Image (cartoon, rainbow, N blue to C red; front, side, top):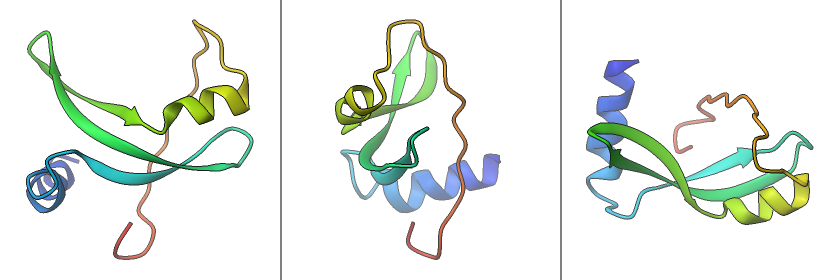
Length: 79
């Protein structure tokens, strides 16, 4: 896990300062292209979805307090 985070940081986040474009599949199996960024919050590094998330919120009728699990995997070489 640490090695994978280092590779992502070195290969993508350093090169593309705005973040990493990823495909997010929502609970309805709809795909959303979002911008994943690494932010420092209260001294901790966290990953946040900075753009593209609002369409997913609307499509799934998410409400404040809703909690959904997040899974990640690699698809092919480029994604």
